[in-house]
Image (tube, rainbow, N blue to C red):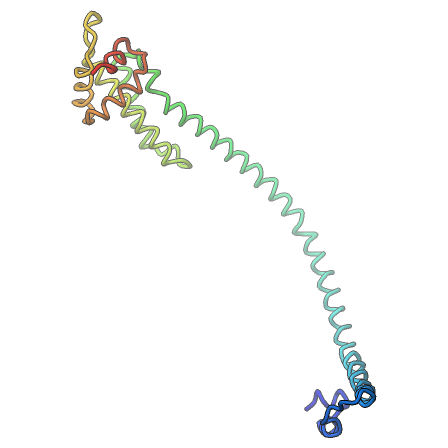
Length: 218
């Protein structure tokens, strides 16, 4: 084999050593003597290995050095571009974050809309419901579609229930009973009794005189 020949020890020489040292002695001095006899073979073998590897290692160092030289030159071109790109990326992220905050604020406004229309006219409430329906179809809140739809639909439902109440609102001297108000809401919004009660209670919250008081009575 080429590798054995390069190391200067033939298969025949190895066979002779195996034959000569085939039995491990039990005597301490004999063991010490045979170890001393075998060790130089390994010392020479290692020296030969280092000799064979030297040009290869040197070539490896040259390869590494040339790689570093070329890579450094490439990094001189890439690094400023990466830094410039990061500046732009950070600006884009800042804009998106600001847009997200603005959208969050708009959604919160929509969620709180119904209570601001407690004292509004029927026409004003209808107009706002129409605006929200247009907004729902416009897809403005593309980054938070699910939450926006929930907010819009929830406000539309509450405004429609408020509208139902106002359309059946009695004269000031005759405050509505719970049954009358709930019946009006159920007919207009197609809500169950429990849903009508919950929605009316949430939008009234004491702001419509007599409503919450009557809701508290069975």
